[in-house]
Amino acid sequence: MTPAMQMPGHIDPVPVPRAAVPRADGRLDLVGLSRPQIREALLAAGLDERQAKLRAKQLWHWIYNRGVTDFALMTDIAKAQQPWLAERFVIGRPEVVEAQVSTDGTRKWLLRSDDGQDYEMVFIPDADRGTLCVSSQVGCTLNCRFCHTGTMRLVRNLTAGEIVGQVMLARDGLGEWPSQPEGRLLTNIVMMGMGEPLYNFDNVRDALKIVMDGDGLALSKRRITLSTSGVVPKMAQAGEEIGVNLAVSLHAVTKDVRDEIVPLNRKYGIEELLQACADYPGANNARRITFEYVMLKGKNDSDDDARELVRLIRKYKLPAKVNLIPFNPWPGAPYECSDPERIRSFSNIIFEAGISAPVRTPRGRDIDAACGQLKTAAEKKSRAELDRQAEEKLAALG
Image 1: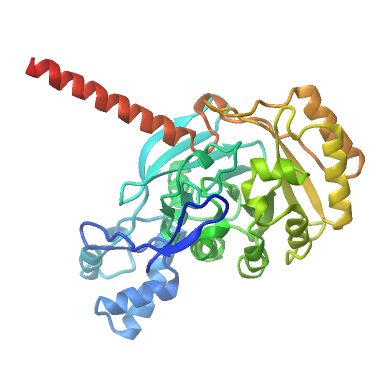
Image 2: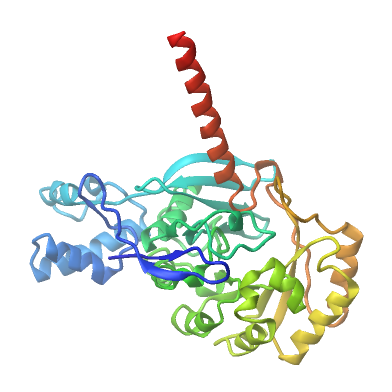
């Protein structure tokens, strides 16, 4: 398989193929593979058709339902065959570079791929739910000015295995194997981590199909939300082929302001984006579209902005709710967070129009839980560490 890579562009990426990096030990990681793909891998390794079909079904259950990573623990697979599998295949997890826990219970992981690329995931526990924020790319190409990930160049797409691997690692950490639909801490997934999911469509779709499979990770599509900055041509396809809830990073209601803070707006404007929302398959009052709106002081937070947002939602007859997000500042950010009274006034105008507009409680600020911050901190630390080592070498030579 060759995951596509998008080269950084000012507004929109240009897809170019990128060769998958094989593991150094030559084994194939089964995480991220569908049942047919596992069967194909077993056939290619030398099993006959009947054996491959049976073993694929067993492996699927052990990997995705039970969370087992060691073939020797798979009790319904013949002992003689377990080493044969272990020689050829692996059931991997992302490497954890750093893990942090906030005073509010938010957990954040900095993860590293086999080819040395770093990406992040965040788990946010609440009284009635636990939400895992999953990344889809290493870096991003969209350069949204309020977003820390937007300051990084896009390195590559994450594979389906790396996307599913985040969910499985979180399940490991929470002790939630085997999969069961009730009573678990990880109840929801949001594709809102690093990257634009719709620019990695195939891998995101394939990963979420595994997550939603009733015999696997078994998370309902009603509990999964995909967030896009507004990749209009892919939105209908996402509704048809994935069918999860849609969130749109709106963040502004006028062309000039959205052009500045979400540069993709220069390619797919607000009206085109809202029409795509109106056409999104499956959107209704029970499955409303979420508009994410980060509150930036003096930029997009006036009462007029709130009234224009209401007008647009009504014009397109959108079953919508608005998530107001206090800006989570990072070093060098070009914006400040709106004052609490300003956010309250903005929210009230939308509520009074009959549209839900909750203000998201900032989470994990003591661990820099805004996407991309942990990766940047780790890179700074490693550079500082390199400087220290260089000084020690000079001192030793002197």
